[in-house]
Amino acid sequence: MTMAIEVTARHGAARAGVITTARGRITTPCFMPVGTRGVVRTLSSADLDDLGAQIVLGNTYHLMLKPGAERIGRFGGLHRFQGWDGHILTDSGGYQIFSLEPGGNVRLDDHGVTFRSTYDGSTHRLTPEGAVDIQTTLGADLQMVLDVCAALPASPAVLRLAVDRSADWAARSRTAFLARERPELSQLGIVQGGTDVALRVESAQRTVALGFDGYAVGGLSVGEERTVMLATLTATLPHLPADQPRYLMGVGDPVGMVEAIALGIDLFDCVLPTRFGRHGTILSMAGRYNLKRAENADSDRPLDDECGCPVCRRWSRAYLRHLLIVDEPTAPRLLTMHNVWWTLRLIEAAREAIGAGTLDGLRSRLLAAYG
Ligand SMILES: [Zn+2]
Image (cartoon, rainbow, N blue to C red; front, side, top):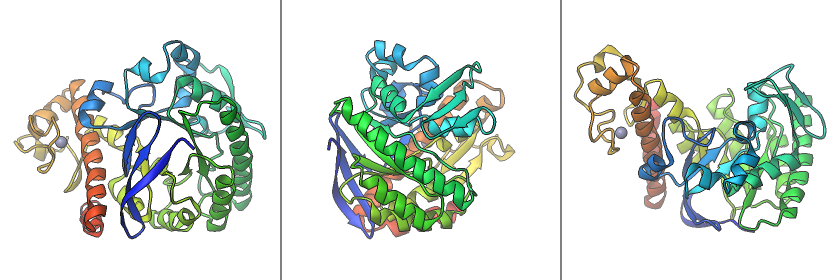
């Protein structure tokens, strides 16, 4: 095993810890900004250093199509290509294939998935083994298996097929990964099963039996109620090894993350802070708001009175709103910086709260602000 988590503090089921990999250390809980195409949109790797990001996500689907994994490999891998020394996690590409091309352009079979490129309509095929090859060529420190994520709500038969296929593909992925003999890289299995608790438990047990370096919970936060998501997590997490990292895929709303941290999740990724930022939706300890609203036109306050980010230290809501209203490209960049900083600090606050035994207070405050 190349990746272990040392738990340094606990509060109920919540845990703070340190993941150690060949590249270095990741303190947890940890939020991973999404760098879809080799960049977190509007930011640079230097910005991510300044914001204190520890790990950034890359999307296999986009990178395999443009500029191509082989090309990135010729530059020494994704770290060197994008000038980033921190950790990189890549997804398997499956989620994008299913979400970008629902319907006729995707053909799923027992062996893999055939799809059309969102860029030029060309036909491509991804298999569990191919996803391992691509992610290894990219040099991703943390890699995800290709899985089948059923859109919710789904019928029992659809969920059953997705779990069986995901388990089969996970086994093939693990074999392919180990055959590459790259002990400095780690591979995570993914638990599926929709909101069916029995299927989730079965999927967790079948995935853990394959002996991955860490485990993700996929297929949640896809439209179900938050209480349903949390109940599913509560049933699933006891079936994952306590001494390995746990990653909740695609959840990044403030309340959802803190609730999941309370249940024992270590890692998160989500496009929410960056997408919100580009469109002028600001995350703050008082809740989220639209900067474009008229009341901000004459406001000399920072985006969040409690935020110490480089944007809040320097500029007013009035100035940032002006940039946004006149479509200056600087606006989405600065607002993204604030939202990413704010999200990273929120997770740090949760980490400190676990140590201090005050996580319930932080959760109550966020629930009051975000509902
Ligand atoms: Zn700020």
